[in-house]
Amino acid sequence: MSDAPRTRFLAKLDASLRAGAFVKLTLSEYRGAEKGLRNLYGRPVELRDGPHVSLVWRYATRDVTKNVPPGEVVAALGKLLGPEFGRAHLFTTTGDWQLQCDASGEGQLKASRPVFAVAPAPEHDQKKRAAQAVGHAPFLRALGVTSATGEARPGMADKLRQIQRFVEILGHLTDDSPLAGRRELRVLDMGAGKGYLTFATAAFFRDRGVDADITGVEARAELVELTNRVARETGFARLHFERGAIGDFAVKDGAADLLIALHACDTATDDALHHGIRAGASLILAAPCCHQEIRAQLTPPPVLREVLRHGILTEREAEIVTDGLRALLLEIHGYKASVFEFIAPEHTGKNLMIAAHKRAQPLPAEPLRERLRELLAFYGIRGQRLAKLLGELP
Ligand SMILES: C[S@@+](CC[C@H](N)C(=O)[O-])C[C@H]1O[C@@H](n2cnc3c(N)ncnc32)[C@H](O)[C@@H]1O
Image (cartoon, rainbow, N blue to C red; front, side, top):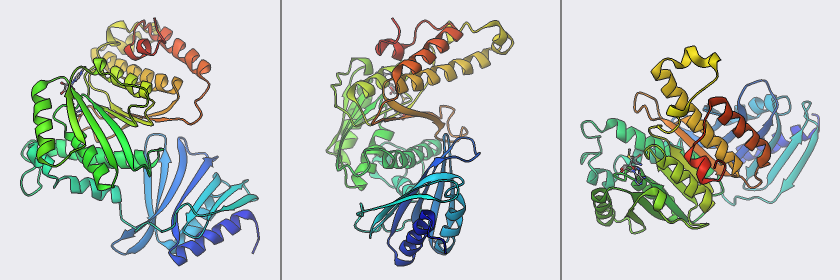
């Protein structure tokens, strides 16, 4: 057998799977032909027909998951390591290994002490199960989403699905962020409304044993009163709601690790994103709502006239441009931003999410600013709230 670093890495993987010492693995530096593919992650899962490894191919806008029996993992990854991925990191309870290799599997293999002392209990779709469990949470009954049996009340099925999906996404995004493993967190939820997702966030962290101090900001006094009462009655001592406008809320540097703004109206999303950036939040999650600001300003070049003479297409274009600008502004200010659909459109039309992770090393801002200027000029946009708040527009 060849002693190339790839072969040795695969032997470590094989041994860890056989010994029950496998914790997880990450493949990166994708060099294959698939558009948008970034990483491949592997974790142990327990399925009805026994233990498997869940392999997740992460694309820019979606995940593709395949559960593979442990005996097939080495062969499956052996084909990908080198030709498709140049880097791999294996975590086991006995040691960690990092492989850097060329297409033929030659390169370097480095060993280090194990980050994880014990293998995680293999759970099938831990996040999905956490999400399902939300249905039985007392706060959902108190807020009128579910009945005593945990079923969605009439007319609330989409809302329950949305809450469950949000919890699932929150799990994925926090696990991929510096917030993973933190025992204490400060969370702001801007435009909390009836608090469905604020409570779901509080329950999610509580179930993980994380002490999360969560503040929901909401303009409507009656909702603030209701949600504070439900928080008291359902035992969420670290969750409270404040009445006020998002834009006026005083957020200090470092005041939030996670900032959430889901369906805050129009430019309230920009106010919230601005707070997140100013606070230096590690993770910002926003699901934009209505988009009014850009639409009236759109004066695109004549070549788009035939497309944008249709009102609905202008409206969608305005939404796309607004959220694209928000993502770009987050990048300029040190975040890695991605935009994706977080729930199927049949559950809600407002299904876009902007997720932004704070980068350890921000990208050089000037080339991004140049792209921003080009984009604004192309569409004839003179005003955009987040750009103004960040000083990118006068
Ligand atoms: C559509 S609801 C969304 C509620 C919740 N985030 C969710 O996704 O289920 C939007 C909420 O944001 C509040 N809101 C909108 N603009 C606001 C602002 N500028 N300041 C504070 N609250 C605001 C509204 O009163 C409303 O309750």
